Amino acid sequence: MEQQIELFLEYMQDQRHAGKNTLESYSRDLRKFRQYMEENGKSDARDMIATNLTGYVLYMERSGLSSATISRSIASIRAFFLFLLRRGIIHMDPSEQLHPPKVEKKVSSQIGSSDIKRLLRTPDLHTSKGIRDLAMLELLYSGGVRVSELIELRPEDVHLELDYICCHTEERERVLSFDRKTHEVLAQYLQEIRPTLSQESGYLFLNSRGRRLSRQGVWKMIRQYASKLDIDEVITSQKIRNAGRKE
Picture 1 (cartoon, rainbow, N blue to C red):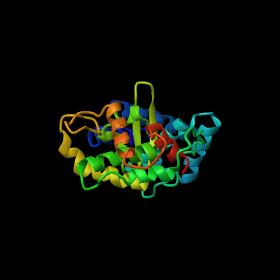
Picture 2 (picture 1 turned 120 degrees about the vertical axis):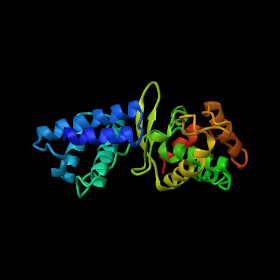
Picture 3 (picture 1 turned 90 degrees about the vertical axis):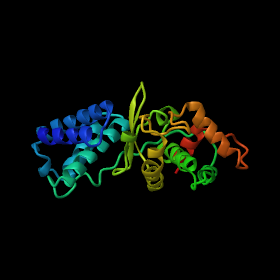
């Protein structure tokens, strides 16, 4: 399977222009997966079935790995098998039914998801700014992205084919999935809006001057939309994330 992994990593680097951290993450996850499979008599991805992959997920859970680590590994495995399927190396995708573990999280905010959904309907989708803003709000809401991660995102961190993003900060790396609505607005932003903003900046979300958004810029955007709603409680990025966890 090592050769198959190498083909995938070359594709991600040369065709998808994945960053160094993303490539290292894929390599680490897939080689741990390969080691487990070889120890269990499976040395070729073409011979693997869904039960083999489920066994690996159960093994990670029994090993005490965090939900975030398991979710990232599943995302790497799914991306790997999707690549093999599209290349015709395999004819059925055994990872299709793999899903990241659900994580129960404490909710500190009492603001209702209905209020946040009203907020999500506020951006004007007839404007470039409105599409950009909704893409960010959806990632905060359905993806659970932190503002510190949001402003560091790059286009290559978005994997629309599997509905997940790779978030990078100095402290950590996380893989987060998102829903279909977020997929749609992100796809529109990436295809129609982002190319018009800047060809020089490598960041995903930019301001009107083509520069990376700051934390203050994101918070200002949220406050501007929140001010249009008749909601007593102050809406913050943390409360948007918390409301999304209640869904």
